[in-house]
Image (spheres, rainbow, N blue to C red):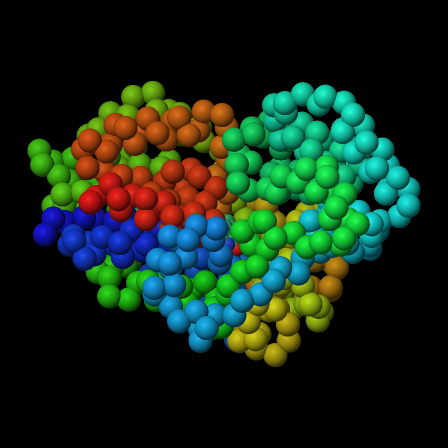
Length: 411
Ligand SMILES: Cc1cc2nc3c(=O)[nH]c(=O)nc-3n(C[C@H](O)[C@H](O)[C@H](O)COP(=O)(O)OP(=O)(O)OC[C@H]3O[C@@H](n4cnc5c(N)ncnc54)[C@H](O)[C@@H]3O)c2cc1C
């Protein structure tokens, strides 16, 4: 059997290892002491803590669903929920999510202004949007843009929305037409097109459950950070061991230094310049509520989202309901505490953690840079896979899907 080294035991690394393990001798190297990467969870005072986010699973890809459910008993081990998300406006008003389906919940002034927007959008020939700001204005109108899309997205992305390219949007946002928005408001329709409009969640241990199960039966070396991957006359040397192929699921920014005997040319520098965000995730006790997510465009504080992880599974809460409050980038504990006082549902601090790499930011050249690096490496038997290896805004199902696709290259 040929030998494959998989670097990184997050969901991507575990998925490709599972795909290959019947045909290859696969070894996974993970720098942490357990699997999971971004989807790891801890227990704090008995409460489940998603160290990053609050991961729920679903997919539009049937091959991903078929593959994934092959490892689990869906009925016994998971619950299925319909998204019950709201937007908490700064003035205390709470409206349904997504906002464009729930205009009827606003004041008559806002409804009138929205109607004027869509009438003129329908009449005028709006140009093709060139960036995220233009997309939001042309698609939803200025009223919704100023009320929600601008303040919310500026909190999340911490940048001028004009500088966010349209390539970022692909498959990530609903793209309702004006007719659909009007129809959805009149009929009070629920949004069902987005991947997480309904979702699965493990009854025990949240997303940690997923990776613990996938890790079973794999040959994984924990506490093993790979800092050097040397090209040999045939194959690669990783951790003093020879391999025929390497699948890198770590961070592409760290790759050029690790493979110092392959010249990535100008792409080496371009990789250094890739932008990203981190996340500060705060585990809190929270008032009882029926929601899965609470989105917060209010500029009076810096948190943008409450993920009501305590509502996803009863076993997530020791006694009282818990949730994760999410901030973009690093927020000090003092600032976290000050911010929590301004949030709805009275969150009470339990613990927090900052993770540096959580959101890859793409610009119009990012995919080209990553593809050029793939073109250099793949003829040598090295492959890139995963959220930060490919600098793609992958959800879990997209990460699994990318592993399934890569597996086909090995057949
Ligand atoms: C805030 C937030 C919320 C999210 N919510 C959802 C959600 O609800 N649903 C959903 O489907 N997706 C969600 N996602 C996306 C999801 O987290 C990712 O799709 C998934 O975790 C990507 O897995 P990965 O293996 O590609 O990357 P990672 O999880 O980053 O895994 C990389 C792994 O490689 C290891 N590693 C790195 N370098 C080395 C090295 N040199 N040597 C050895 N090991 C190394 C790391 O320790 C890590 O374990 C969310 C993401 C964020 C940031």
